[in-house]
Length: 326
Image 1 (tube, rainbow, N blue to C red):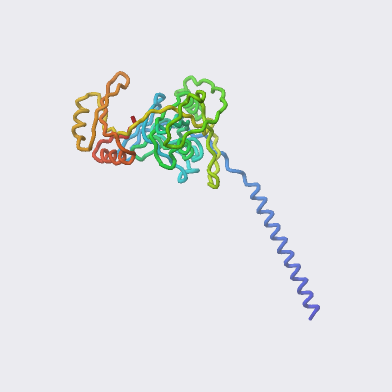
Image 2 (cartoon, rainbow, N blue to C red):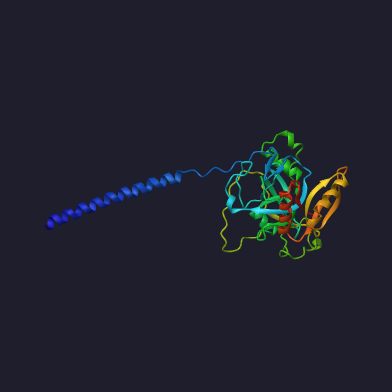
């Protein structure tokens, strides 16, 4: 009995040894395969894209090249729900990169966005379409909204200006061809970036006398303990750096513009029709060689009230109505 028990023990130990060897071999093969799996290829630069006119919620948008673009309005931002997804021109959206969505500018384009409430200003790359919420003129990445100081509140009054030379360079890199590139000067040497302490949100903008012209601040480090997604790899050659400049800004107000006319009589008639909605005024503006008469409601006390007024006008057929900042 002892001999049989001893033989069984030896056999069991041998079997366990064989199984352990098989497990080690399988583990080694699995890890070898895992180590041989290539890293995902970097995202290629997106295509140059202007696009055809399109309609969203009964409002038509007309994409076009506009190297004189300069508009004020309300900005919003988008982030986690779109992180890692394709943008409208085939790039990969990275909420930590300096990018934005615009409804009509070519993709890619480069624009300067200035927060008219605190004077902070950044450069971003337009590589997506949107925003499609009425009353917004640009949808910024999470990082751009952080640097401009409005991520928590969600919206801000902004000025958006296209950067012609940088936009033409971005178009050239995206394969736009000679039709839009024109003469693209060589990029200027990168200057050193100085650090400037910016005021808290809501505080008055500092006088720039003590700082040299063009003084900038580097991006603030994330709050300790907050987990941020790793930046996505991109093959873009013209992604702006997360640098904030401080601009001098003047007080502004929010209006809802119901329409603009070259004939003052048309503006007067519309003002009369809308008089029951509150304060309606006619603002004269020279665009090129033509005087336009803009019918505006306001000033609005806040963005929410402007949104409600805009939706009311749109529901009643005023499809050219929009929120403006002046």
